[in-house]
Every structure is written in structure tokens, then in C-alpha cells.
Image 1 (tube, rainbow, N blue to C red):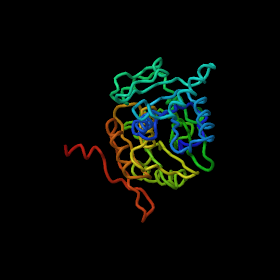
Image 2 (image 1 turned 90 degrees about the vertical axis):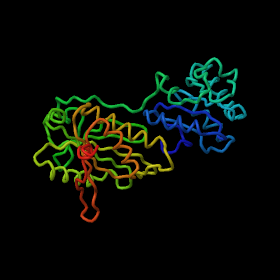
Image 3 (image 1 turned 135 degrees about the vertical axis):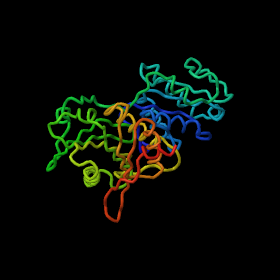
Image 4 (image 1 turned 60 degrees about the horizontal axis):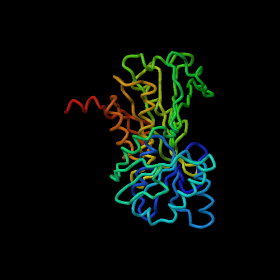
Length: 327
């Protein structure tokens, strides 16, 4: 979410209760959950007082689950104790979130949290804790994809004045996926069955994302390299803040993980794993492109296209197949 200190989201989410004095573990949980496609609400800056009480109460009542980071700082925090108290009160009335304490360090779990004990080692292994949690409210859902049917029969929209079909099939925490295809009325099976299998990928995580001209530039580069082939483009956009596409680059965070993992899930959904080549076009921070390339190259070959501002076009510059020859 763009502002985790503001109003809680309408979709299922997890609230994290923690002591602001020691937020490190809470932030790691937030990043990992968002990387899994789970929406998170955290109080990062709400002033304590009546506004805090109102927003915390609303957030607790709407949360699917509340993770309580229980460390030495939490034992001294009246605010964490109040959040636990409010969650217990909500549960006593038949509602409220599932309470999941995460014991970290040597702090003894409070009597109020003992009945919900889930992590007793105190070793702060966030990855193991989240992996063992079944029933996470995952927001990253992918619409069913039938490669034997044209996209327009699966909810795809024909773009006005174009032969492209646009099919939005995934919305995650910070990004969304859309497939563009050039073959009207032709089964999208050619995406999987043609040899070699190819899929263009355009990642847009910066200002100017969402402009149709970006799609056309990619298509022009594709047609120049693969003339006569059906055009399939997987477009990832996000995240948005105040109506603008803008990535939070203040250190590792859930936005980056969500984008990388959503894109990987989308490619698997469309192509499956196995021999295929992804044509990679990118509009965003270089570090994000490196992270995506590292993740995807484990499963597929990658052709990298570089945008040349002087000529306003993409040019093919590198292939992972070529790099493999130097190993």
C-alpha cells in the first residue's frame, strides 16, 4: 500500500503490532509478506491520542490477522499492550483478527498472548515463521488462463483503433499485470506452442507508465527482430502514489519484492516453466531491473532491450544465452 499509516485497505490485510522503538523485525515481516502478495497495515506515524485510538480500532476490526512482534521493546510498550487488548475484545464479540504472536529474543510472552503462542524459539526466524503460517490472506490472484481460447473470449478488450487485445489478469499489493496480444480471434495457444517460445515483458515502475506509446515502442522493436510473429507482451505497472507511478527506493522494501515475485508468477501462469525466451524491456530503477533479471534468468532465457532516448526506440543489446557461453 502507498501509505501504511493511513486508512486501512478494503481488501483483506494483515496488521502488524510492534514497538516503534525497535521496528526492524516488523519491517522485515512487512517486506516478506508483501513479497508473498499479502497486504499489510502498520502504524508508522499516527500521533498517539484520539486519532490513534480511532485508526487502530478500525484497523484491528478490519484485519484478517494481527501479527504481534513480541520482543523486549514490546514488553515496555503500552501501545502494543493496548492493541492486543483491543484485538482480544474484538474476538470476544465474535469478530476480530486471528492473533499471531512472534516471539523474538528473550522477552517472555505475556499472559494475554500465551494462548495464541506460535513461535516459541525466540530465534527471530521470520522466513520460517511466515512459511509455516497457513491461510495467509493473499491478494495476488491470477485469473484462469486458457491458451486454447482467444483472449477476447476470456475477458480481453480490443483496443480502439488497434489490432491489440488487452487482458488484465493479476492485481497484487503494489502492481498489476496485463497481457497484450496482436492476434484477434486467434487462440493464445501460439504463445505456448510456437517454437521458439517468446514473450515480451515491459516493466513500468516510473513516471510515464501506462502510456500507450510505451507499448507501441516495444512492439516496434519486437517486429523489427521477429517480423511476422504474433506479438505477446506481458506488461507490469506499479506502484502508484498520488496518481503517479513511483517506486519507493528507500532501501529494500515490500514494493520491490512484490514486483519481482508477481512478475515471476505471471510468466509461469502464461508460459509455464521450461525452454522459453523473454524479451525484457524496462522503465524504472536499474537495481530493480537487475533483481528481476536475476530472478527470471533462473527459469528462462532473457533478451535485453535498451531504450535509446536520442532515437526514442528500443534496441536489442544482450542475450543470456550469449553470457552462458562465457561460463
